[in-house]
Image 1 (cartoon, rainbow, N blue to C red):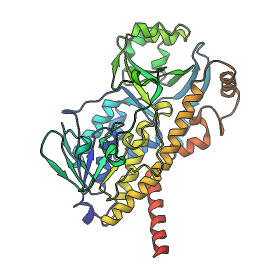
Image 2 (cartoon, rainbow, N blue to C red; image 1 turned 180 degrees about the vertical axis):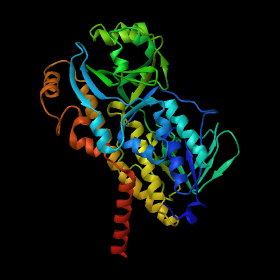
Image 3 (cartoon, rainbow, N blue to C red; image 1 turned 30 degrees about the vertical axis):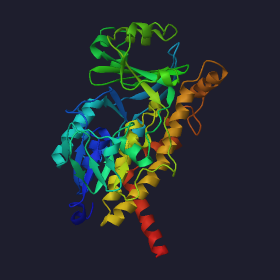
Image 4 (cartoon, rainbow, N blue to C red; image 1 turned 120 degrees about the vertical axis):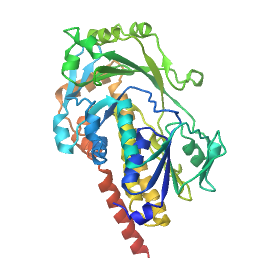
Length: 437
């Protein structure tokens, strides 16, 4: 834990009350800091549906004491199953019990709203101040004076450190880099459909999808469908090709005619098409190209008064299920480093270490995620046939087409420990300072 005499008088203001912002609030309060979270929405609102939490994220949530509450409405999948989109042939089945034992935490699926509510309640219980209905624009981020002016009032907020956990459209990121980041279409959108599990169970030939909880991924050409359970609801996330033209970009959710979308799936496995027939509504979101930032893009301002975490720093794509996990890792690493500081200079040092550590790791995750999307969404043809041969006949190792089953990559991804990583980096930094003094 930290030097509470310093931390107790140090005010951290987190901009954004999503999963990463709330987890960060808890982690920083545990280190003794005074914490305020500023949330845009007037009440606790959550978009999206299902979320996967992999062992590297679940261990952090175990550490902050919300695991049991989370488990009350979570599903523990038995396996990740990759299937042919046309025949439904199982190409690869990855058991999840062994890695859960190995890494000390399971892979979970749950509703994003439930996770956020658990974190929200825990943050309040820890003494985090949460303010709702707070609007901030780029002009209000005053890097020169280290303050934050609210957009719709005359209030100016003072804090010792501002953390931007305000998502992919982060105003804090825009202020740090000096311009609004350009949104570049990824060429894909995701359709999200929720089905009541009781409707699936009513069809005997489909109830295996609910009774044997698994993450099932149908691998299609330039597309894929991911399904899993969510405490009474069955979640479908269907990635589909989309135009890269700027005029076809959209932001936020759009409603989709589900019948029209189903009509495009004539070649897909009948079970999947039948599940979709049970749906009553569908929303879609656009994917944008992630950027793995290098040293030229700051995540921390020169004065050490502002920094960014989560999607504000390293927005990714969902093909490895690491979006939330990467953000939780980052804010845990940041909180651990800040907890070691005994003065403002050491806060600045901790921010520099955080930036270096997380740029390197999240850059690797972003690139691995893009590669996984390319492999899992191969067009029909010889390359896909070779991929399927590897799935069916080769033992997972380096280069296996499911990187989550590659024992080396899996160890690197799921075995990450923020506390140990922060401790080692801090100690190395202090030794380097001593050598140079």
